[in-house]
Amino acid sequence: MDTAPPRDPGQLTFRDAADADVPALVTLIESAYRGDSSRAGWTTEADILQGQRTDPDGVRAVVEAPGSRLLVVERDSELIACCQLEHRGEAAYFGMFAVRPELQGGGLGKLIIAEAERTVRESWGAAEMHMTVISVREELIAWYERRGYRRTGELSPFPYGDERFGVPQRDDLAFELLIKDLKEG
Image 1 (cartoon, helix red, strand yellow):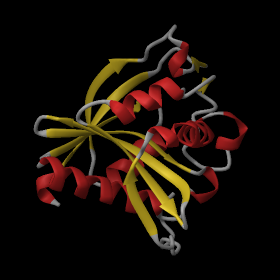
Image 2 (cartoon, one colour; image 1 turned 60 degrees about the vertical axis):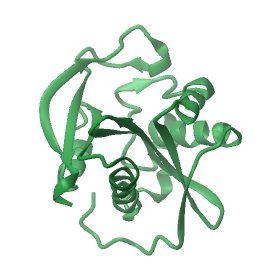
Image 3 (cartoon, rainbow, N blue to C red; image 1 turned 45 degrees about the vertical axis):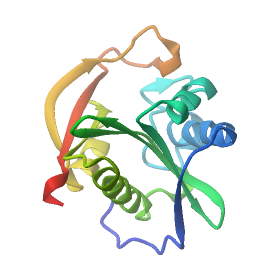
Image 4 (cartoon, one colour; image 1 turned 30 degrees about the vertical axis):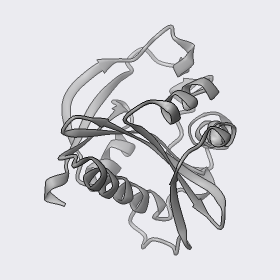
């Protein structure tokens, strides 16, 4: 998905989310992953999961948790993306990454993940970035591999039966841990 040169993303600003951002963040995250609106982008999970991706309580928990930041990305004061950063000792966790579907594929994701990596190195001294990706999302995993993340083969079960994470459309879902060494740049 990233073979074309990045389009000019315009002036991006990054800031920590506040409680007032929660409704807009839920809308953004849902639009990037679920339902027909997510099909405008390439990161959709609509064919493997239905139902919600998150809810206001889940987003608020990330915003308010100690050692956690929900990074808001804006262009011209408009919310266009977000990602979760969580301090986990020597590592940081990267999650809840969402870019507005119509803006996907233009290079924004590369810029945002690079800023997230810089942020956790400088703020927390993180030596590694960890993330979990649904293991059947081969195209998405390949995108992260091109950013320097490596597959570990370490799987954790998908929370079947807990509709807070969606309604699975297949029975082979699991999360795979991906890791990037941040000391190498």
